[in-house]
Image (cartoon, rainbow, N blue to C red; front, top):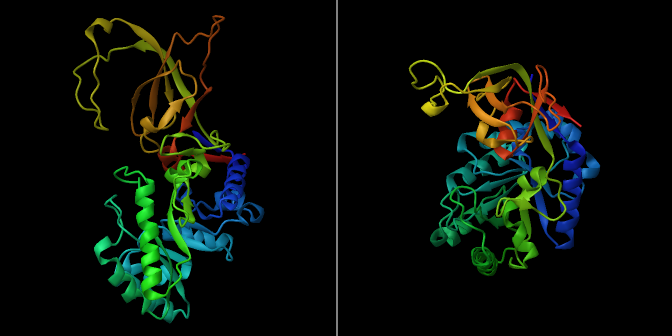
Length: 365
């Protein structure tokens, strides 16, 4: 069985490093664990008390994940990081201490659910700043806040935005300054102190180093930087965060010298791919290996060979074919044999899919 190797200590060190980094900049932050989809083994192995003690909250975008978070650590403050579906208001109040919101009807439902549960539910209201994803329109923002402030069991603790996730709109100083100014307007008009101006995600981290964020931006929601050590703004390592936090390895289940060009009439494969080959290669051969995973587990575009001499050939639902070239090392010895493992570096989407595949073994180191 192919295997995802999770380097627990390196992820924990990343959490501790970023906690200290944010503390030095007087910024609160939420650790976003959605890449792990609420995997209880991960939660128990990685989110130990000493690691999360300086984190404001742990967040996810799925209710089942928040439920698992509460089961592992009932005292952990949780945050639901996408606008909730109105129908799940009771569950949101039960499993999320905080939620991000942009729909007045949903907030009314959350208020009703919180009243029934005898709770105060905290919310951060999201503002549309150009990404065209979730967020209240800026022209409607003041009326929106006014109506929500009237709800008995809702505590508005902040204002937030989401940039860079769908259309790649960068969180520039000017964008974040708009968020900061709206916070000031709301505070002045309604005499309310909003604790959080949540304008930061992993993509925003480099702006801290560049001293390009307004001083009022005081809350970040971080996932990718913790688990992969990079900021999506430039896909480069951020500070001293570890980037070698995950490995994916698969087993060679067949290794043979085969033709480069298939024989027969070429049409669409059962996974929708059409092969293209040059007739000049019709008589050539190469050493090919079959690995024990496929598209049901991960997209080949989301994993990178550690051995850069290997080449991708094709993939089906449950097997991947690679080209080993001559399969010889520099000293002329055979490099790979049946039963050997081939290693890959997975990206964010690869890890998310691999963790959700029941056909992939997970190992914590």
